[in-house]
Length: 102
Image (cartoon, rainbow, N blue to C red; front, top):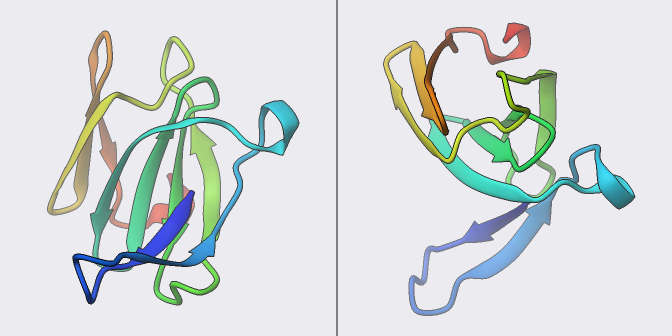
């Protein structure tokens, strides 16, 4: 996953990246949502990861991946307060008040 600096929306610039475990050391990201300093990335086959993006130059995976039934983390995600809702073939709700303990 690449973090972009969008301070100039007409010219987004890559500033940092993080790889997720999976095939060839990277798993295809299918959805991302951000809440505060945490990005939640859903991968195609290896679940969903919480990523600390407080330092955009050095994003870091926090905690362990969440793998709902079917393997993917959800094709659509939204954070509402301390809950993250993701959907693929079902809707899942996660407590994200402490992303490192997801």
